[in-house]
Image (spheres, rainbow, N blue to C red):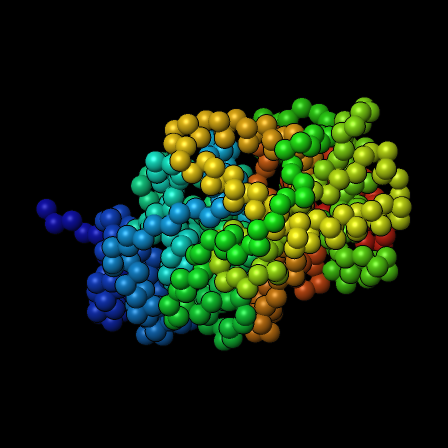
Length: 495
């Protein structure tokens, strides 16, 4: 009995005999460029057939569709045996040590189109885009002393969203990916395990994917800084651990001695119980910060402090509210890496100090200035690098259970919450008419109740709250504070 491949049956069902005659040589060319597990071969072939069918259904002749999906764009990415492996960068080494079946340090970056997503075209955009990011086409493996990243020979899929945002990725297969692309209605999101990259690398990948998606739809969209050309060879500098660039300095302060106030109430069983997006008018937000002679980051941190005060365990004592603030080290060093190259500082205040916005702004501004200084961050990077060096010869089988317990405890005790400001995302003029906004979602903390992020594009500043509690004290107070500044947000998300 002769086995007929699924993609051949799909072609026979979807196209006329005349069209099949045109497609035959084309699909043979595609097939010759793929040497993967048979199920991945069938899936990639089906992807091409479905995309060509989509083109035909939307008035694009089969010949033009084949030109847009030129098999040469596959190169030899799905053909050659990739044997490259990468040690984890200094910042990433802790993440796989602390992961479990129900916890993993994930985050999501998304763009919202002004029309529904076309899944067939998105899949082909991902198939081509991943070629330019070989460091992302990987999986996590266990070594003797550390985890490492190994090349994964597979098809990378864009799937409809069915899981809770930033749910842990199952890494039980030899080629399990460390990121996922999901879509829902007009939103496309990429969820990353933090071992791969930080917000900068994630933004470059997402913008490159968006550019390729629009190209396949037939739009003439120019490249811009931060959008990679898929015809260029990957630059080895993109997967270098640039923590070695830091000037060695003694750490001015560490986080281990701190004990932060936590949000009240019991953690929910389902994470995350609440994901809320506050869509703020970006020009008005900038003007509000400018009027007070502070940055947008400082203004948001101050508003968060005001909202955290009534939401935390304010029963006295010396403990303070600590907000973890990531800082992109690329602004201090000439780095081309797509890997993690961020450090953290802590912004803290005792509840008794938190009175009014105008009163706390100077102190928050001073802390941001000190905490994000190159000298302070160099010291923290030096401390992190030394810790990794001290542990480098401790077998993984010993390190992992200790780190699993300590990381959960420290994430609960050292910080009250985290605030990540990805800054302004820009697009070239030809892409702007198609995109409504971007947003960023931090994965639910292991034990903390709250995580916040800000992502700006065009006229939108999307402040996102991820909260593992059903009681909306923090967001209600924050909403009132924003309204008092004439920054009334449009709120959407889970109830």
